[in-house]
Amino acid sequence: MRWDHEKGLKRESENREKIIREPQFMRNHRKSFIMLGFMAVALFNSATGQETNKSKPEPSLTSAREKTVINIWPGVAPGSEQWKQPETVIGSVGNQRIMNVSAPTLTAYLPDPSTATGTSVLIAPGGGFVWLSIDSEGHDVAKWLAARGIAAFVLKYRLLQVEGQEPAQVAQSASAALGAVMRNRSLIDEYSKHGIADGIQAIKVVRTHAAEWGISPERVVLTGFSAGAILTSAVVLQSEARPNYAAPIYGGPFNEVPPIPQGLPPIFLAVAQDDASAEPLVTRFYDALKAAGYKPEL
Image (cartoon, rainbow, N blue to C red; front, top):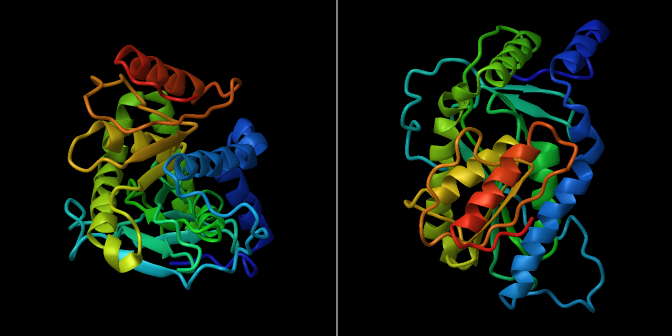
């Protein structure tokens, strides 16, 4: 189900904007934090000896190969066999948000082989596990990276299923669900569990196809924004399939930080000091990593 932004009634459009409006700090600082995510990946690329030639001209965003969509699970994703709500997209191209994701995918943006560095980045957009800001925190990031020789994969992960027949109704249900989790933080465990499973599976898929896609299985980066940063943190802390580098941006473990295990990869974190929602999460995660003997960057 797709909402036609151009043909929608003005009143419905205005209502939608109110329903899915972002916090002020996010609207003010989004571009800065997304650039921090880019910089974190660039630092990893440079530190591992794969920096692109600085003498080359600034690459064009069109210099990546055509994008490809990959299903990350064979068949129906485990745990969502009974999900019936259709996937819903609202907003115009470039500012789209997706709700009721039940079929998780990776959208691959592979660089031109002549510029490929061997590094790959999986990108988890934010949206409170009720929607995905798929363009600004997903496809836009991927295009930027691919144009610079880095294979990028946008993770469309599963979300809490919400009710509604029309897109505006679905958005309203999603907004109500987001409000509920802000009032009861324990709900995030239920909201996020399928998305986290998708993050783990996505890393496995990328490593399995590394040779086919011209990337190194030892140079896999996971980054995420807001809820995507919560997902990133959870994937890093489990042992089934960790990335080689992680960059959770304005987000971290939402409730109590679990015990910090051995063998974690380098971790870069970023958050605004005036972000009342995310700053405590990020600072607490940073402190826990430091106490466990790691050297995270913040």
